Amino acid sequence: MSYIGRTPTPAALTASDITDGIISNAKLAQDIISADTALASEPADTDEFLVSDAGTLKRIDYSLINGTSVIVNAGLDISTASGEQVVTGAGFAPSSVIAYQTISNTAKWSIGMGTKSDSDYQCSVSNYLDSTTGVTDEAHIVSVYTSNSPDRVQASISSWDADGITLSWTKTGTPTGTATINYMFMK
Image 1 (cartoon, rainbow, N blue to C red):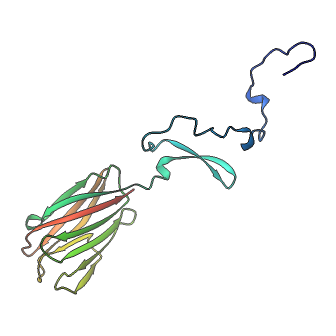
Image 2: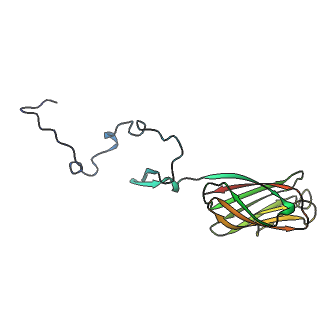
C-alpha cells in the first residue's frame, strides 16, 4: 500500500478495534472450515457445534444432537429363564429400547418396546397359540411362547443401567429352547 509521507507504525488489531456486526460472511475466507484439520472419528459428547438459531449464533454440544442407537444380541436358554438377566453393550445409558425375538425352529416371534421416562411397556406376540393368533401384553417387554400351550417366559425391565438394561424373567410351564433376542437401545 502506498503512503504519503511516512509509513505508519504497525499496531496489533485488538477486539476494541472491531465493532459488533462488522465481520460478515463476505469477509470470511471460503475455506474457513475446510482448511482446518478434519475430525477423523465421531465427535465426543462435549464437542461443540456453531448453529444459527433464527439468525442468532449459538453453540450446541454434540450430546444434544447425537441420535445414537445400537443393537445388542442376547441369547436366552428359556428352560432356566426365571431370574435376572443383565443386557449390556449399548455404550450409553439408554432412554428407550425395542426388543424383538424368535425361538429356534418355530414360527413364533415377538416385538416389544419400552421407555425409561414413563416405565411403559408394550409387547406384541405373533403365532403364540397357532399360526394366526396374536396377543398384546402391556406388562412385559419380551414374551417368548414355545408351543401351542401357555409354556412361556416373559420379561419386564427391572432397571435402566449405564450400559443397557436389567431384565426380570418369569417362566410359566416348562418351556424349552433358546430364544434369540435383539435389543435396539436408543439414547
